[in-house]
Length: 268
Image 1 (cartoon, helix red, strand yellow):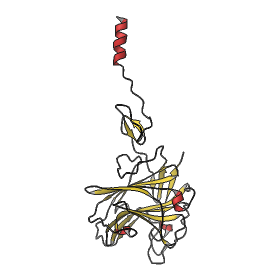
Image 2 (cartoon, rainbow, N blue to C red):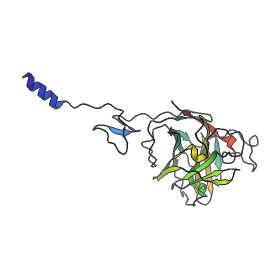
Image 3 (cartoon, rainbow, N blue to C red):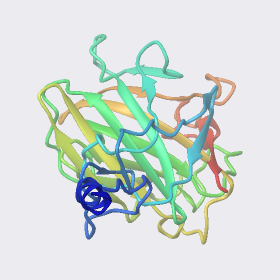
Image 4 (cartoon, rainbow, N blue to C red):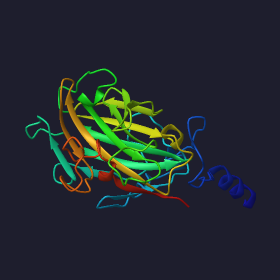
């Protein structure tokens, strides 16, 4: 009888593997688990916090690189809301109060900076080709790899990187050559009422061997109809004209790196 019970118990035993097994495109999680943020789990994990203060952000370090596909469901870090109330600079260039609010997030892996954003779709989204894609609905990511944002002029390791709703990309250096080539990995997806963008950039694309521990960073959520840029909600603006006024009489990250905020890598 003991042998029979042992056989029955053995037949019913189904061990549950622990969470934390690495997963990805080439691996499949055990039954009852699913892949999230690069590991097999049984319950959806909480997002990794991005600490946000006035002009300051943290960039969580990841164990696995995010998949750049325009889908935010598997994005591992928490989002920061950016709208007319939270923006450091609200640029109305013809929006008439019709802005493109949304949210953004940062992450890092293997010496690369990852950015994700979701914006309200303000129609029309615009179809201006490269390089003038800043006239379309897009994001503008402002990065200075060394963090030396002490002059209005963009250094060689700083750039304004624009990715629009159709995944067109372009980069610019204000006061330092205009249009530049910056290699960016990106993807976008347009939904019924919003569009999403994911992108990553390495320091080598900005002419640097590595990112400083604290880099210059800013982001703008851009509304554009393809003919004109109608609005930009900028996360941070250090000061207002004329205290930090550019030569063209404006005071914004697109023309003055002193307007950038900072983002610090949370490296182990």
